[in-house]
Length: 342
Image 1: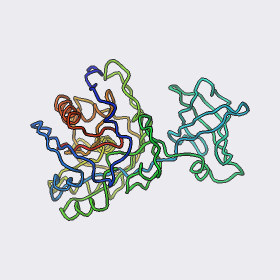
Image 2: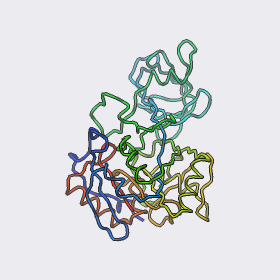
Image 3: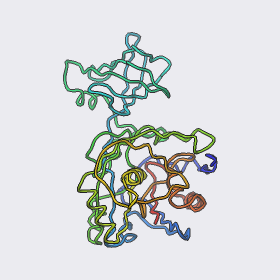
Image 4: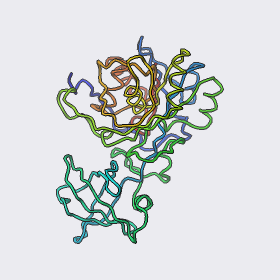
């Protein structure tokens, strides 16, 4: 399967630089994956697309203040460290820039006097970094004080409030990026869902570096996806199984929920609580066992996220839906509009 098959033309003007206000005023393209039929709605209409007994699955991850800008010691040159995931009590895997100048043993200092020492070089500009807070305080608070909420590289407008890049239900800190399909939800949306008899369940998947990267291999199958950590509670597993047994649909909010659900479902279609790592790469040919419908944003060309959506709805139908979205002036990517695929 060719990676180029998941490319599409997008005018730069359609890359959203600011989120919609209010959150649920974004547009919603509804795609019937059986017929290819398309409807145009507003996100606050989502409850009308669901049925009593459906279970909406949310990713409660919270974005770390993961982008740290500082100075290399002793030269004073500007450096940027991007926290990816913890690798020990005081060690994090980081993406660093400029990588060529940040080799093992290099040190940098950041806001608040926090220092980082590179202890191991990894591929792709990644490093293992040991952190020491100034004055011996807590590492978590030091990282929080030294860092900024990261935005994707295609967003060039600073946010006045970093909370706008968090879902309103974010609670478990650990992501390098937001689960952006969830950015559209408001308290009013959840009230409407409850009034319609739609259940909600939450799981956690911490989003890593791969969400920003296009697939660079010529063949899709040659791509290796980065692993990401997940956790599913006993309460959530029970809710998923009860909804499925009662005939309700499982509606995943975002590709992160899709990957997690497809990771934890067994051959009989049942869900088990637990935590671990997933490196599941979903592309056309994947046999879905867990997900019946999904809410998702419009994704980058040649990305693993677009491949996952194409696996769920069919590549040709997704390409046609994206072409329609472009023609209708939908807003794309993290702060853009949404799709409901059923």
